[in-house]
Image 1 (cartoon, rainbow, N blue to C red):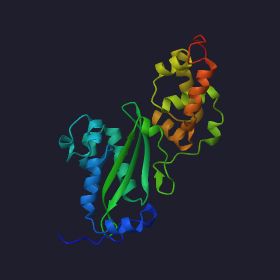
Image 2 (tube, rainbow, N blue to C red):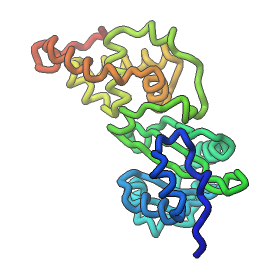
Image 3 (cartoon, rainbow, N blue to C red):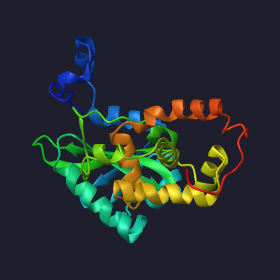
Image 4 (cartoon, rainbow, N blue to C red):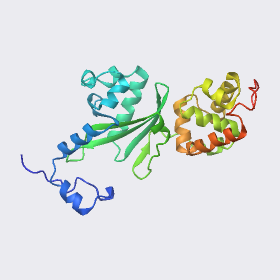
Length: 253
């Protein structure tokens, strides 16, 4: 097999040394890509432009609760509920026409999830496939997108002014919701009733003008509210709320 000419395959801004770039220019890209996928613990999938699954790592297949071999060749419409498959179609279309990675904030199986999609192009620059990396649970809550390399899918309005109207308790509840905690767990942590937590959740929806947890994740991550999660836990512990020093209250505070 002839040695591929990969001189321009690796962009200058990747931070590769000259020696590494020279070495990689002699490597078959398919071989390198395959080796990286096989060694990765990330939930990675490859789709064609029409939305058919071509490859999935073991971690990605686990999200579908099926072996990878049983998933290959199936369309997004067959693998996802109808509403989710439509969202996937829009994301694939967006990623195919975008030179930067496309980031989508979602909730899958009650877990915060960040999907990062990159188009894979042929020599002529035409998109031939979409690579999707899913960050799920804790890795999603700590994910930070790089605006130089990534764009957020379906950008919403700026919520800075609306966030300023939240009380300290509402911001704490927002952070815990985005971390994936359910209402019962939040009620136990802040020593308030379940009804009070539900009231705070309703207030968040009204004040921020959103209806779903996915939208809350988008807002909280975009405005880096999750950076305050550690300090939120410390403040609750120091105040005695997390240790049971205060009784459960049934009213909203």
